[in-house]
Image 1: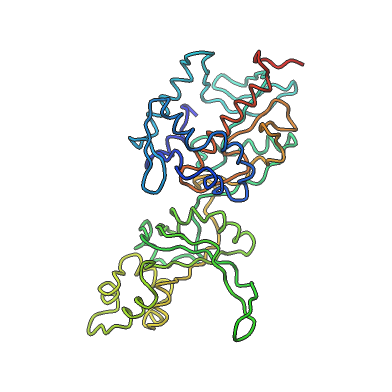
Image 2: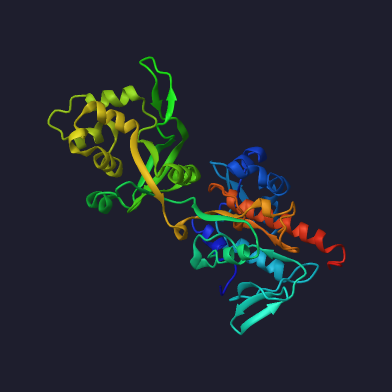
Length: 400
């Protein structure tokens, strides 16, 4: 690309969430099945170290009410400018040279790095190479996943790239009426649950039966899109939803539209006399349900069932929505999959390619939004930098 750090700048569009202030062990748990693969890296450079690094660049940070950490001015550009200035004008050592509009194409027969450049094809011999090529989300910013074919041809194991922290489509799509009225509208103050498939046989007083278990539950908000749902609580459950879709072809979720109301209170309000008022007016007056929440109830229940007080009460507290596919990779915030950890040594050097190291989102890990993504990328850069120094030796040059 013609400039550096485009996705970093995008990450700060709504306020740069650099890291999270929660305890290190809890922080590492957010990486799910890959927590063990990133534990040492995050143990060496986690949230406190990221904040100290930013402070060293002249950027003060603060902890928000949710525990997320932001620059005081909430912007990414000042941090990026300070970072690039340090790299170009270091207090000691050699300056970093940036070469824009260069596309890496792998290696030539002599083992040299090949690039397409504004001046034609060029090659470069390196004693150590760090690949930090990103995943494949937001490809217009530069990371398009084209490196996958290059590395697989070189014998490197790469898990397929998948969308992470992404939206999902609903089964059958929305009706035209609801889509045009609700797309882009937030569902605020809800509880979002992901259920297991109804294939767990349990003992029931009336006999053995199948039961859904709650696999994920969180209060927050999401957004209705033209095809389904996206937003913070959906992103937080995206790995689980994606795995359910992969395994069962769908994921069953439930929305509690009034999580601070008890089931009994909702039922009492629904069944209260409404006189000459319409059902919509009644629900707005008694339960503060209107707008997109009310529209979603009509969308999922239909007009006839909306007038069944029991079904309506149950739906307000547990509205079923079936999700059937993630949105395309290019729309996702981040990427799952990538270079398998089994293909790396402890320093993140490829075992199949001596002197070639990998870091960041191109590795096979994923995490929710909340500062985890940026921290892990920074931490792996720090980890790999030290590993390269060890690989090259004290003189900075590989011998033998």
